[in-house]
Amino acid sequence: MKTAEEVGEYVSLAERAYGILRDRLVMLEIPPGAPINEGALATELGIGRTPIRESLKKLEVDHLVVSYPRRGTFATAVDIKDLASISDVRRALEPLAAAKAAANAPAAVRKRLLEKAEQIEALDIESMTNRELLEYDLAVHRMIYSAVDNPHLEEPLVRLDNLVTRIWVMVFDRLPSVGEHVREHSTLLRTIASGDAEEAELLVRDHVHNFEMAMRGAL
Image: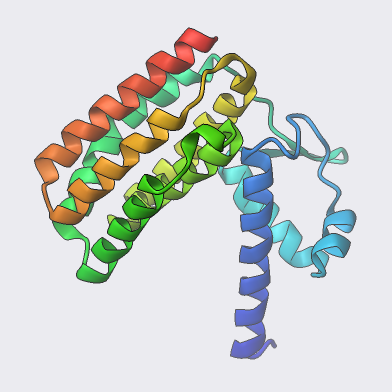
């Protein structure tokens, strides 16, 4: 039987593998349809195959990989047609998350939100690539979802944001700079940190709508 320390180390390794693989899949560094080689990943990351397998199980729940008996595990395809159905759910959940974060986030979290807002305001957007800007977009959304302190809301939102980001990456070459989209986050973060739940909800509603319209224009 494993000791508590060994179990904790195992869980930590699986979470580390999950985080690395999730971001590679989201940013399409692992292309849609590509096979996932457990042995190669275990060697690269310096961890055993069992934590890799555990992370892949979680990624399958996230719809980022799919496993087939006797064939293996593969990165899921990116279906641009999913944008409409994903957006339907995000329009409902994203404003709720922003309002809850504004109402409930503790002081330490509000401080981190303000620090992220200042970081975004200091960005030299014109010199940044869409990919670099997108990393800020992901970080902000995940920070807001975490600030809600409700895993039943956070988990589906992270999952949906990951999926829509994959679509975004697919159309990078057809989009103008997404700098202003990312810049909008500064006002949103400050509004949440100030505790204005109603305004945060309105800002997010507009933000999700504008994003969907920009994506549709690029498709």
